[in-house]
Length: 625
Image (cartoon, rainbow, N blue to C red):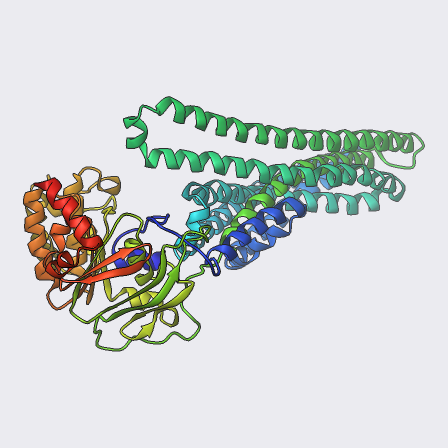
């Protein structure tokens, strides 16, 4: 997709224009199977293995992770050290001659507390930095990868769902890496350190504490998997809601024109409620998990402490040892209960990471071969379709092209005409290699496009689509999108040739004026003229015009048409036009019907034959008259 945008200057639409498929293999079948397999796998797997996908991103910032871990060790050690200081104060700080010792022990506690505060602050800073850095890298990689996916992927996946993975799912990952992972490690270290010190304090009581562990692990095993499954389900439902919202906002003018605001809002509310209910189910499972862990942990700790109190009464433990054991037990219990809640977050993140991994694992069906065949230099602009058969993904029984053959000589202007759905726009899509045909060959300058690098092939083409796609940037940058190294003088020259210079200069900031999302501050005709200027500044040997003047009024169409005639000089040009008056000066008119060429010749010759072209011309010109 990035190659598409960068090479043609317009963002391709996600769906096929018309027509469709039959016979032979579906180019998107493997992709559809891949998506379905991913969803099936998500239903079956109940572990946290998807989190392994985080390893490369965290590993890329080992220094930050190492510093955070060092601070984590210091803060945990300081926390455990406070229990030792409490024991010293309790056992040795209240004797008759212990005034100096008491002061020393309290000073030691202050020093340990200061170290704890410093280490905790350092841990929080570096862990948060690591989380934000990792998520920034994931988002950048995700977006860069999405731009490489072909249009077949977006026939089955809504843009809103992709955006949900870029935003919502990565935010969940950020919470784990930037907060929860630190909490989990800290609690693991606290539990481990506390148990080690407790063993030295009392082996018997520590063994009793360890008997509590299975009571914690059982609910973790029972409810953890359910939490993860519900988390993935909730995230899917949220993605559905976001996808529908994006779709409705993208077509807001249509929604408002038909007065369907209430209907759209109701459908979105239903989607949101579905996502909410899924989240509630996940929340209930996490609440049950947390409740079970906390109850079993604290009941066990209370029982162990009762035994410890009996040991003190029997003079088997000192009061300071009991105090330390109590504090360590509370720390261990709190850490274990916190681990139960963190485990729910880990399960939730595993669901998010699985969705991210699925997106990263998606592979375009149209891509450069391992050893692409270079296109000949200099470019000639020769085009050849040889018995091409093509159907869009999921439309095997409805061919867009069926035995289509056409050869366009360098510098020739060929117009494609025919009824809607005949396959005209599909010809341009295959030429730009948005898709690969199931049969036949498409060649540019004698090279099969399947053997060439799509990026290299697209550098030889400039497209003006029927729907002029602009960006929320300045007019200058929108035109320069066709060739990033174009000078301002070249941009202005292209705008002048496309009859766009005058209205752009009239904007408040001229060529520096931001055009708003998709250029909606401009009229349809103005957007189309900027798209034409973008194609002209590209100065490519092949010019593709798909209803390039459809949005212009009669006066501007005449002016722009003359500019296009000038631009066609010396270039190979394919023109798609429903209005036959715009193609009368073409070197050759090719009539397409049912995905194949049925007639070709000059205007007068085709009229004389009395075929499909003659009937179309009669309908248009008589209606106009």
